[in-house]
Image (tube, rainbow, N blue to C red; front, side, top):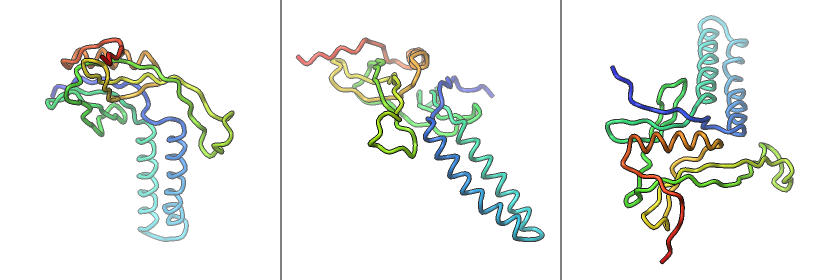
Length: 174
């Protein structure tokens, strides 16, 4: 069976989201651990299996990456775990045939840090791929990346597998 053309680009979860998955996984592991140490017989093995499942699911969530995949329904945004597509979503918009990369300066706050403390925030550039109408006055975000190289690779993949064209963002309000 031939694999669908796809491109895996960048982690889908930032460091805050990974921390939340880690904390939730620790809480979820409490039940199997209690089950292992406070029961006998078959319930010990059920606790072991539950613990392995929680760890496996947490690792799978930690390794989720975003990218694109070409299917028979069109090109879609796809989330991959260990190179296997696990979730796909359509991104197209009617009357928006143009692709463009826009650069934004963003600031991400560390988890569990007060909002009133801006020195604990992290500054980074975000490179977002947008679908634009002909005059560039309407736009719809497709996907954002932390590295310009990944946004460039995504644009190249989309240009190869769709009928979109790339243009430099220059709105015409006339």
